Image 1 (cartoon, one colour):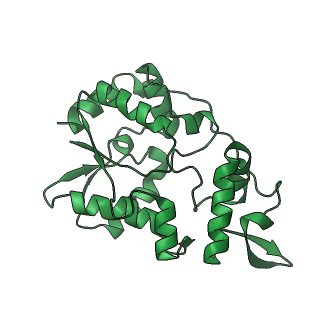
Image 2 (image 1 turned 45 degrees about the vertical axis):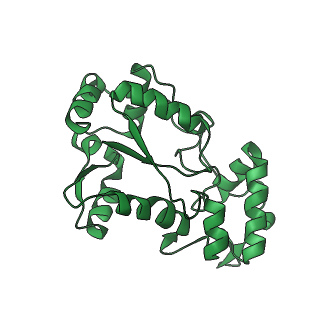
Length: 225
C-alpha cells in the first residue's frame, strides 16, 4: 500500500504528480489528512500558537507524523524515501522511531536525489512545480523551517504566502528567522528581513547515474506489493 499525508499548503501541482505516480506504480495512493486541523498549517500555527523551534515544527508533528502514527500498524514494514545523501537523517529517524520497521530502498541502491529525478524523467513523469521553480524540496509553499534565503525566494515567487506568514508572525508574536547583529544572534520578523539576506541556490540539473536504468522497476516490484 502507498500512503500520502496531504497538507493543504503544498503546491497544487502535487495532485498531478501523485496521479501520474499512481499510474506508474499500478497501485492506488491512499490519501491521509489530519482532519482536526483540515490539513492546514495555518490552523496548526494559530491554534497551537507555535511556529518552529529546537524540537521542530508543530505542523510536521501534527499534520505528518501523528497522521502516520495513527495509520500504521505494528506489523507494517514502512518504506521511506531517504536518498543516498540522507544517511544521517535515516539514522536519526531510526534512533527516534525504534519500533518502526523501516525500509530505505533509495539508500540501499545508492540513489541520490538527482538520480531519482532522473528516474522520473525516464518514466515520462514531469517533476513537481516546486523543483522547476528552483526549490530543493517539494514541501509546503512557505515552510517555517526555511532560512532567510528561502524566505526571500518565497517573497519573489509567492508574495501572498510571504505576506500571510508575516501576518501570522505578528499575530503570534513569534518569528521564523534570525540574523547576527554585533556578533549576537537576534530573531527578526519577515517584515524586518532584508530582501538580499541569505542565499538560496537553485536546484541542481536533473541527472541520472548508470545504476538508474532498471533500478526503478526493481524498487517498485519489491516495495509496492
